[in-house]
View (cartoon, rainbow, N blue to C red):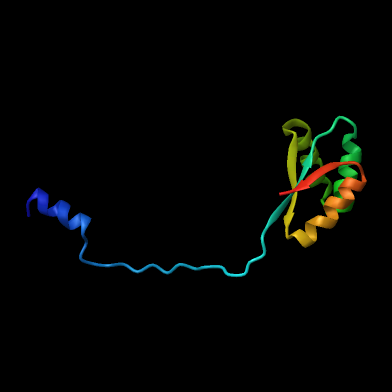
Length: 101
């Protein structure tokens, strides 16, 4: 077999492979609840809000609060719009800045 025939065989293999692809239908969209930094609230206040509203553990709330402080924002929860919207409204009612994306 010469070099040119081996290239031809490589580009057009004789054996065909079939691939199964799973397709997800009717899935719930996943949204993110993002908390933004401000210069008003204390770390303790934000941590308490995340524990109470988002059901974070103390460690989760502390980590999110540090990320918000140094990065400007942090995703504090993911889920469906039905789950996140009440949390977003409660954060806003506590004068924290959040958005759902």
